[in-house]
Image (cartoon, rainbow, N blue to C red):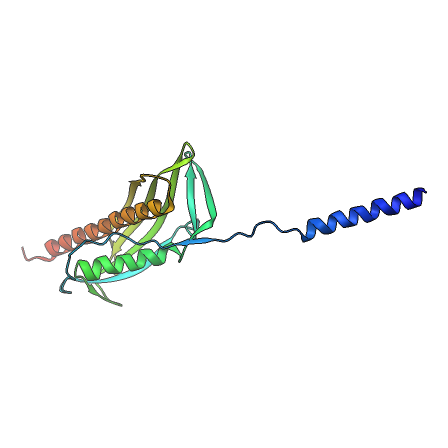
Length: 204
């Protein structure tokens, strides 16, 4: 009798284990979002007659990857497994820089030997949560403009953009506005560097 009871218990345990192994939780289906930026309306493409500029190293911090980042409090960051960018964020940054500097500002694109090289690192790309809802997004960049010998501009810039609601479309559009401000800041830094070099090389 004891042997039979033990065999029945063992069979039940195996059956339960089999159910646990074969039962599947709901699969994770990621949603992908494209990080664009707000382009000015009605602006014609600029004539490429400015100084030569080369895009150097365009990178992102180690935590800024495909998964969207949410910040809670002062120090806590979490990653959204189901909400991801369509590309690594530095790819969006590089395309945005090329668009603004070459097409909108009229700098001439150079592959080597340029008087100005622009390096840019994306150090913050996060949505800030307060009281359980996303209230704003933050885009932070570190800009270095240099020639072959010296740094002309070293700058850190942070753009914040409030979100009207917590809908993903609203949040992504806010990212686009913040990214646009960051790109414009790089263009302003480059304009300052260009003016300073022109003044320094002018005959006295």
